[in-house]
Image (cartoon, rainbow, N blue to C red; front, side):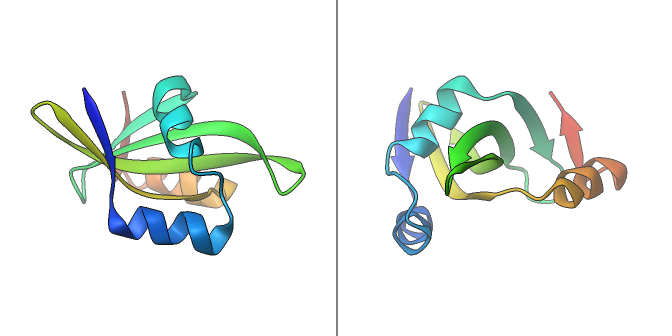
Length: 93
């Protein structure tokens, strides 16, 4: 499967000073996986070291035939995950 980075993701990596390889690491080694019913995309979460402390980091990606496009990445606050699950927007896979 071919993995590509969206232009939005590339900007987020630069702005947030996130290592360029981190989205692909999360994609391959995630701790949690969800389907976002609102967007039709997938959400992967992995605890990583970010800014000298452990943080849940999430990526959002879409899948098309033999291609995965990672759309965005950001540190995830606990309330964001809880809200996605509680409202039914995110369904654990």
